[in-house]
Image 1 (cartoon, helix red, strand yellow):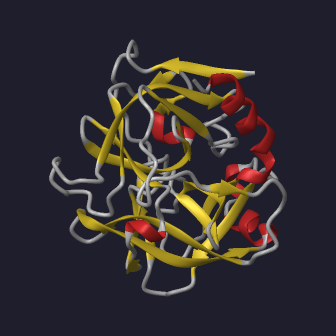
Image 2 (cartoon, one colour):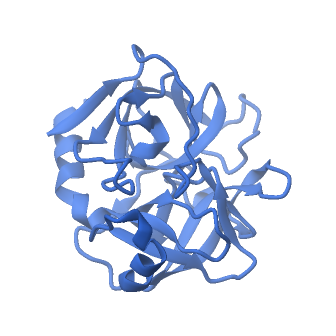
Length: 261
């Protein structure tokens, strides 16, 4: 069963809850610039035209992101959301050829999402009002139907300088590595619940950080979607957490089959 939220009739309420101190939007900082044709599934999820989170195109009408990106709490949802695709420049002029803006019709939140239990099942699917025009800068990602054996991945998003809080204009990515879950549990033992669908990672480049704004952004193995960034620590050198999509493969496919126009 899914939790559907009509964002056109939802009251807007912004409550910033820090990740591990709550779930602020998170951004990649200190990575390398990447071009849109290299990551054409990447989108910016925006509130009143301002970047909030990342997301991934999974069909012409659907975006995968984190539930924590579209909810301030279990029953408080953001309205007036839109998705920007087709550009690695978040400030690109509206008249640009491949830049696309699509309004979000409603969000489908995982029915077992629990923000008060260490944000377990932190996944949501956004249904767009109109379809994305598929081209070489905007197209769906593939995602694993089984567990990934890879130990290194790429995290992609729009970076924020943690010292100035200035949003980086261009899309960046950084190489990251998974760390054993027993090590992650030791770091976050005080938060109790830590499920098998939650994985921890650290940037390989020591100067890179996942900072404010990249919640909902993809974790990629090669050109395949593996996970969605969920939680980012407020403590330097602590691992971030992503939701592993392998555990939600059937849930996602049921939504695509039942909701697609």
